Length: 184
Image 1: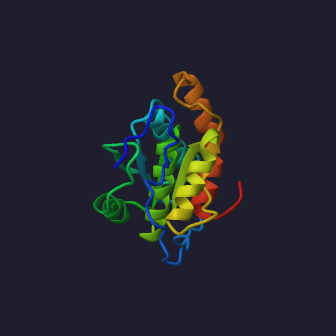
Image 2 (image 1 turned 120 degrees about the vertical axis):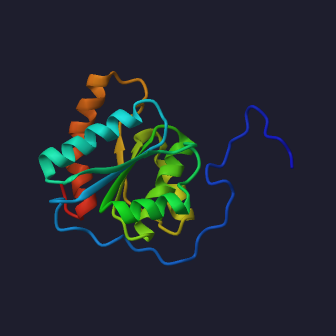
């Protein structure tokens, strides 16, 4: 196998074949009242803080019961394992994941969202707006063309903690709407 040179364009989908199985979103809750929230962060700078802030806001402002599961992926560019998806499906009612702040982590976050949805768990994926093409490519590859996720201005990694909290406040209503199928 040839080694890619320094100017090679890398395929964030890994060159894998597309999934042919039909895709449907997981059934949505009427609202988040009493919902058990799962957070899956991907090790990217500020991802944990952004997701923690969103979890806090979903509890305080949208009636979720609590954040009941919070995990950190071992590799930001790899999709969540089947075991991890199953754990979230057992322990949570909805999941928020990301932050896709680069090409490979955006693709991976989209793959995670599709996997959670296939497992019956409504998911809100957050990617920075600079990487829509990679997230869309991975969603299509996973059999979910047009998969809806949220975007936030790029980059997230350089924000101060106060700016991250402000960004979470801007996203919270959209996250809740995506998890419930309503519009913000």
